[in-house]
Length: 72
Image 1 (cartoon, rainbow, N blue to C red):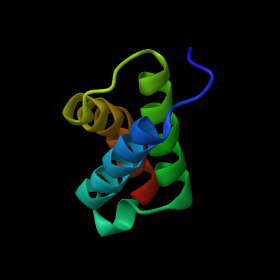
Image 2: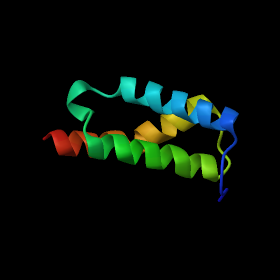
Image 3: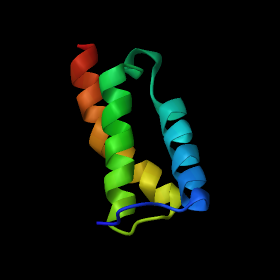
Image 4: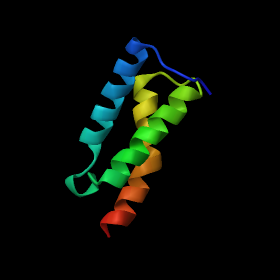
């Protein structure tokens, strides 16, 4: 896992996070869901995945089932 990201990569990751949050439904915008989304994006990036589309997709696939359970 990487220890730090350069400013350009951080900007990409922030954009991925913002876009992923926009994809969530209003009832899914909880601090817990947003935190899990950020953690997943950072974990994937730390493993070397830096493609914004794949980062967003993989993070949402991991987080959305959790968000649906929390909303129930």
